[in-house]
Image (cartoon, rainbow, N blue to C red; front, side):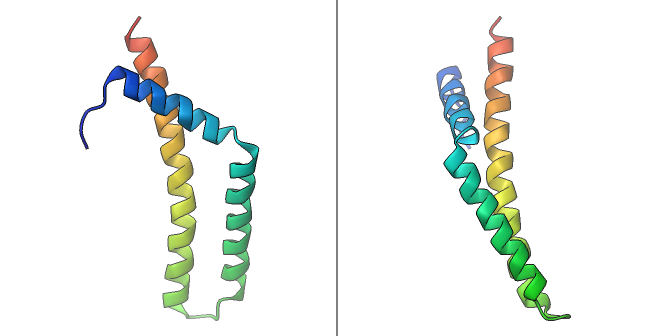
Length: 83
């Protein structure tokens, strides 16, 4: 990954904050997590392949949220370092 300019970091932070505050996006992600949990409850005992698939889906949702928070945090750090 190439280093981003200050403007790029701040733009990404603004957009990530907007997405984190977007009620529809959060509702969709919450809905996906509920669907994933429902799938987990229906898995047959010992079905490691299906559990791995479900875990992968949940990890993807968590990764999206983690990345957005990270982008916001990077913008905060960039703002503080500029002062």
